[in-house]
Length: 180
Image (cartoon, rainbow, N blue to C red):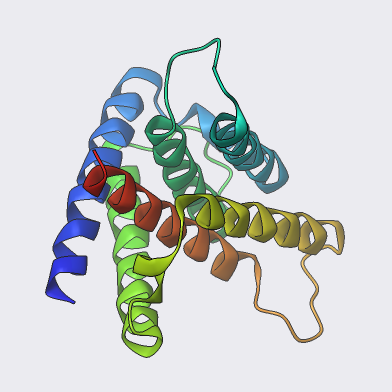
C-alpha cells in the first residue's frame, strides 16, 4: 500500500499546484458559491468525463484528466465551504486557503488509506468508467441531501461523499497515468 500512498501524493501534487496557481490568479472568488453550486460544478465535470468516455470524438480537446483534477479541487472547495459556513469573508488570504486545502487533502488521504486497507485495494480492479459512475452517484446523493436541507436518517453526510469523490478521482487518475 505504500505504492498507493505515493501514487496518491503524485496525483494530488498536480491538483495542489493548479489550486495554488488559480488562488494566486483569482483569489477565493469561489467563496461566493453556495455548496449546491459547487456540487453542480462537480456534476458538470463528472458528466463531461462520462460523455468523453462514451463519445467517439470530442470537440474540445482537453481530455479526461483535467476534469478529474477539477472534481478533486471543487470537492476540496466544497469541504472548505462547509467548514467556513459561518465565515462571511469572500476573500481569504492565499496562505490560509492553501493550508485549509492541504488539511482537507490529508483527511481524504487518511480516509483512503483506512478504506484501502479494509477493501484490499479493490479499486485497482475497477474500470475508470465505474469510478466515474460512482462519482456521479455520489453527486446525486449530495444533491438529495442538499435538497433535504442536510438532514439524513441513516446515511453519511455531505462531507463523506465529497471525500469519496476526491478518492475515486485520485484512483481514476492513477489508472489513467498507469495506462499511458
